[in-house]
Each structure stands twice: as C-alpha cells, then as structure tokens.
Amino acid sequence: MPELSTLFLLKLLLVPTLIALVTLAGRRWGPAVAGWLSAFPIVSGPILLAIALEQGADFASVAAANTLLAVLAILVFSIAYARVARMGMPRAMAAALLAYAVAVVILKSISLPLWTGFAAVLAALFAAPFLFGTAPQGAASAGKPANDLPWRMLAGAGLCLSVTYAAAQLGPRLSGLFAMFPVMSTVLVGFSHRASGPGFAVVLLRGMVNGYYAFAVFCLVLSVLLRSQSIAFAFACATGAALVVQLGVKWMLGTSNKVGHQTTNLDKANKI
Image (cartoon, rainbow, N blue to C red):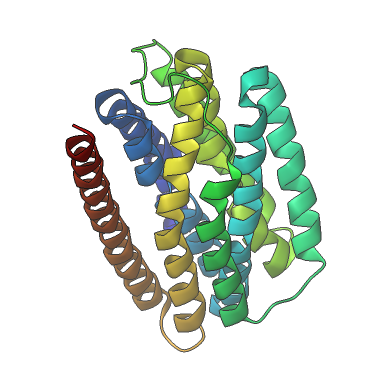
C-alpha cells in the first residue's frame, strides 16, 4: 500500500505540475515548444507504473504495447481537432474526442506485433503534419496570460486519476489504450484555444506530434524490458531512452529550422 499511496500523490501532483510548466512555457516560448514538452510520457508513465505494480509486469508489458498503438488514436484526435478548430473549441473538442473514440474501437479490434505497431506509429507520425491542413491565422502568437492556470491543473489531475482507476479494470489491451487518453491534449489545447485562439491550439498540437517520437520509444522499450527485467529497471531505461530521443528530435528540428532560414535568406538575396 505505501507504493500505491506514493503513486496516488505522483498522479495527483505531477500531472498538474507539468501542465503548469507547459502552460508557462507556451506563454514564454510559444505553442510549438509547449506541444513538444507536453508529449513526454509524464501522464501515461505513472498510469503504466500503477498498472505494473497492481497487475504485474507481464500485464503491463501488454498494456505498454497497446499504449504505443494508442498514439495512432491520439494522432486522429489531433488531426480532427486541427481540421475543425475554426469552428470553436466546444465543437472542435467534441469532434476530436469522437474521432479518438472511433480510433480506439478500431485499434481494439486489431492485433499487431510490437515491432509492426512501432513501425506503423513512426509512419503515422511522419505523415501526420501533412494532414493538419492550413493553420488558422495568428498560429505563431504567444499565449495570453489568462487567469486559468489553477483550472488547468485541476482538470489535469481529475482526468489523470479517472483514467488510472478505470484502466486497471479493463484488461491489458484496453488499459493500455486508455493509458494514452489525451489528458494533456484535452486540457492544454482546450484552455489554450479559449485563451489564445485556434491558431495557437493547432500549433500546440503540431508540437505534440514531434514529441510523440520519444513517447513511442518509451512504450517500445518498456514493453520489451518488462518481459525479462525488473519493473524499476524497465521504467528507468524506457524513460532514459525517451529523453534521448526527445532531445535528439529537438536538435534535428533546430537544425532543420536553421537550414530553412538560411535557404530563405539565400532566395531573398538571389531575388535582389
């Protein structure tokens, strides 16, 4: 029971803290950085850890493999939201959650080997940015300092606790899928849309796509190691691998942006 008490505090405090930090990062550095930060497995990680401690490593290994597949459902959520963001937050959120639910039903009905699922997720992550469509005007603007931070944190804690307690009752496949419930997307995107407009919300979602590469690696490493290693070792290695990939993706994006900026300047010079 001490472990469960610690996990309860972790879920209660860690997710709201991350939401607060990501919100402040978005207001300081913009939605792309906020989205990239929010995709780190800070929500699903504690949920999978709770499942591992309560149900065992084998159960959690299957759950982690299905959490990996659930990235596909999150991408469906993100694309659906981006496509209808101009219609306002309530309609966009309703459409995105409906699309997410349909995707989960489809994923539940299929079974993919772990490495095949990982390859499918990587392919979907690569394709997703091309499916977002054109962002609404004002997408690159910083968030407004709205006084909604406590409400964001409270909503994040409530969603995280609800998903955790529901997941353990659903079996390894569904618990893995629901461990990837779009807690961060729902809270951050919904509040940001109201505070800063649809453009900010869409760029936030685009940034999350870049962060899901690290999340996918986290789930892959976790599912593999839980089959033969201790829970602590598996989670430590998975978290370390995710951090390396997260920083690597950020470096690659920074390099790509520099090259693009240099190319743009060269084109302008040639025109002159």
